[in-house]
Length: 360
Image (cartoon, rainbow, N blue to C red; front, side):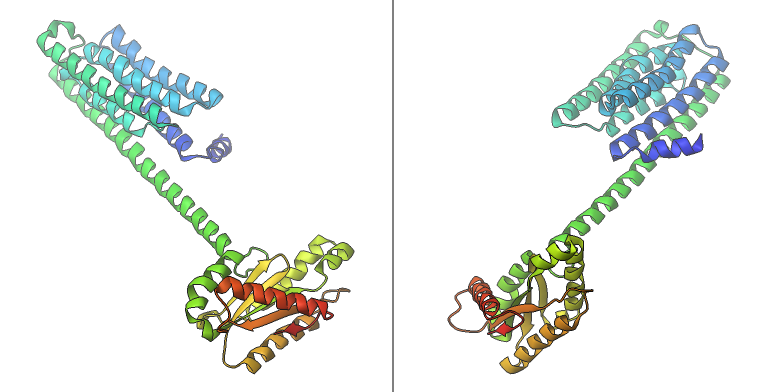
């Protein structure tokens, strides 16, 4: 039984569904105890029937909600049935103000605050139902004061006191348990959405396969960081030679493994703390924004990257890179896009010269 309940709970994939079952289950149990206590008091037949009707209403709506998945609709049906029909009947059948029924009436209105809807129109209807329920219950209470002969189910003072105490305990439990779990569900949902937002933010900044920065991050970095201080940076753009042939010969999974291994190596090359950036620019193409000391040392560093990748082992495949780099502080550059275009042309030039080399 318990494993089935756990599976059922895990299948409730939204906060609204979980809140529905928490509220309805709690109301049902409170209705059961209240109905049994009403039967024990032996007030009258109307009070007993109305009390058990509360329990049956919850069970029926829960069954229909599970079958139709119309959780919002049936939750509103429960709220309207309680506040507009069952509570007024029980108020007159159980002794009016000389019972715990005013507490139940308040709780029935309180349940409207957990109405969850799929649209503003339905939400507005729920507010109207709540308002009309308040007006109806207040009017019936005023009517009972002016026409006490309509109120039945009176008992002695001692039984009245016990009834109010039991009603207070049951309603306090319902309000506390539902509110507490609503906050717990809200907190869980908030954390879940925050994790999703963090994950989406990470994926927008870093490539999932290589763990390098994405093209979008690179462009933002060039525009906001590099271009205002372009004399301090150079851009090295390169790609893996003949990766398409490698994919055709060994399969795309092997090609992804090559990209991943190269990417993991490049992660450790860029000195991010000192303002450098390494990114997967497009497919098998990479871009490295490096800080400039002097052109010779930068070129030596780029050659070191090319040689280290060439020395890597990839089974029977031989992997090399071709690239081009340019100093960002060259006065002929009009913007960062011009730098990217220049490096791309130098990359094409390196390919035309026989690959596995760097042009600048």
